[in-house]
Length: 124
Image (cartoon, rainbow, N blue to C red; front, side, top):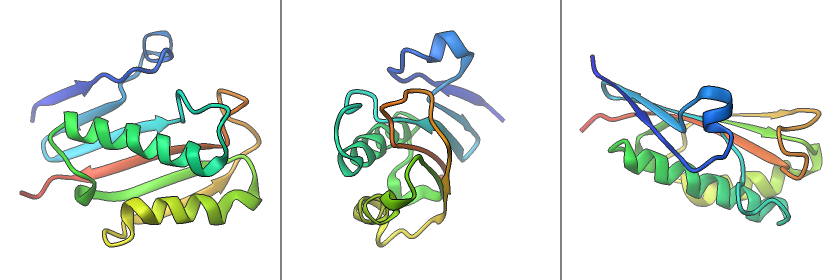
């Protein structure tokens, strides 16, 4: 199978040595994605920005949100789960991928309150 690395705009990609997404066959794996550019916004805006970055990476890989089968959300504040969940629902309400929310102590950027990973499978 062919592997395609999908670059993003994160300043951390060349430093850490990762791709925003990797496509192998019909599978697309999107790396942990933070709200780059919305660092000082509230958690809802950070979540929306993060999911927009993920959506762009999926599109570069030839996938759509409808292809997402799994998301993993990492929150730094337990109380944010409802707001994060509502925004996740704006993007995935009818798609309903398997999803996990985990509360972590902190993320790479101390201003981030959310980081999200996504896995997609292109079936068409």
